[in-house]
Amino acid sequence: MMKKTLLHTLILCFILLLLSSCTKSKKDYDEYGSDGMTTRTEHLAANLRTFVNKGTIIGQQYATIEGIGWQGDSARSDIKEVSGLGPAATCYELEGIERDKKVNSDGIPFSLIRKDALQMFRHGAIVTMTWQAPEGSVETVKEEAKKVATFIANLRDDYLIHAPVIFYPLPLGLGNWYDRLPAERYKDIYNAVMDVLKDEDVPNIVPGYAEAFTDGSPTMTNALKGGKLFDHCPDNGDVTPVIVNAIYIQPAAKANAAVYTATLPKFVQTVAHNAQERNLVPSLTTGIEGLPTKNLFTNTMLPIVKNNRLSYVLFGSNRGDFKNHHFAVPYPGIDNDIINDFVTFCNDRSTIFINELNGVYL
Image (cartoon, rainbow, N blue to C red; front, side, top):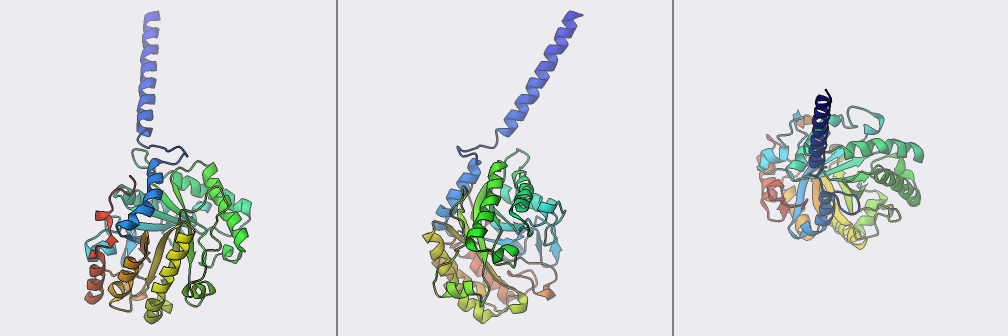
């Protein structure tokens, strides 16, 4: 009887040891650097600076999650359907996750965002996320940031490898409550959010700073004069931004091709100069909804990509019915001249799509 008991005990110990070994080996697929970040995240932060020597990475907001007349099919994108080239970067909004909502402020399910982000990562694309925090006290924002931290930290594939995320908390210029804060007060709240992510041991964050600019606004006027930008950008916290994303999108209701094409080159030049002065990597989110001009991409966008050392360019999202003109890149069925203009832009050696984006995490 004693022998049987001993044998059962040994078998049980062996099974537990085996299970422990399997779990450990599975976790070992993700490697960590000395600062607690995954090595893939560290490599992404470094490569954002060096990849500008190869060209500009091109993507779109919600690139593979929705387009004109469709949503939720991660195997397609409007960019790929008209050009044959897959987007190499994307962006998702996280507003709503802090209050346990199932969908974000754009009506996209968080389950779909998670699935899509992991698929983009598996294909080697860059994943970016913004979080427009609801109004509240610093303590409230910090508590809500814990749920953002949990969502990002749980972006892990079947091998438990984290998908690195360029994270832009509290993007300015989008009409939120923190737009009204003085620079130092804004920095305090930004730093509080990033401290939460650090305290929660989120290992897959590349910190970023995002600011939107609109035609006729004081910040845009200052940009067009070559003035100083990003005065709210934090530089006094434990976690400081690596990259800045300047947002300039003309909505369909205010689309003015003449203003957009005249404004964008000077604006981007000032953005790139200010970012580099602060030792930040410059990137751009842009577009004119409805594409009212047929040669926007070759005449305006291509010279901007060629003449400025931008890490990536994200175009605004394509959403809903084409009659609403909520699209910033061509889709199947739009005027062929616009498609041909976009294809020429995509095929230029200075633009990088997913088939050419090799080693950004290495």
